[in-house]
Length: 364
Ligand SMILES: [Zn+2]
Image 1 (cartoon, rainbow, N blue to C red):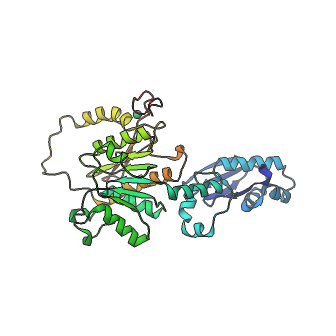
Image 2 (tube, rainbow, N blue to C red; image 1 turned 45 degrees about the vertical axis):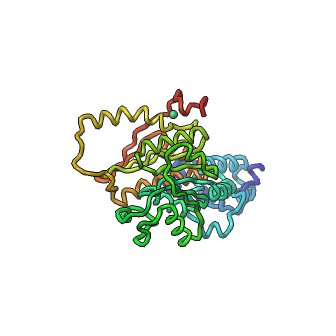
């Protein structure tokens, strides 16, 4: 379709300020903006004509002093900058009513309403596996359900314990002693009317993942037994072989929390790319450290800190599930850590090793 016949709308998060020769476009979602030089005195009124109802040629007819090719170029430029979105397939009223925030978020990643609708449709069907329903996994699961992801499988062999309740979502006192996987499934069905699949099993090998009945489009590893390192290694081996996007390495260490890294096989740093860089760094950090005077490390972190890690992991998962372009993924090619004592987020960049024998394009 020619640009003249297209319909555009200013995204709802965009504010416009006209100062002298400069027009500023401010994205209120992100508090960032850009500006263009424009001296046309009626530019603000003209821009507000992009309301999702008029074609570019219809707007041009209202402003005969503007050349149509200039208006087309402006529309395309503003679309490219995510200020305008092309309205080529209107949303259903039920989607607008039930998912306003998801639509608002997805419009930040796509250039047309048809792409947003396709993302919503595909995202609701995307098959997601969450391994481990502890402090992070249970929160991630709840976030994804609330975002409208419905095709979810959870895998965990633990039962709910009283010590879990202060930091784990979806479990209550009445659930103590019950399997976490089926309890989460039942509580979600009771609260939301959504059915998820529950597997009461511990993931111990690549074969455990290969034997699952469904093909998974995203695997999120939140299992920390016997260690996050070991479970992430299994998930990585399976996912690199099957080219499955996955999130690994998340967890917490008392007052620090590590945000799970997103891995898109062949495009971003994999578990082994991280391992090659971080193992020597961690060894140097821990050199000479004496064993702590405590019988167990399994006391868990305080609930809200687990929630920080889980919320960020879920946000990244939602981007992957709904097909956001790679440039919008935030926890790729870096290790991100949150510090409870000062609320600092630290990021340590880890580039993809182009000759990594595990994730190079030759091997995946
Ligand atoms: Zn790699």
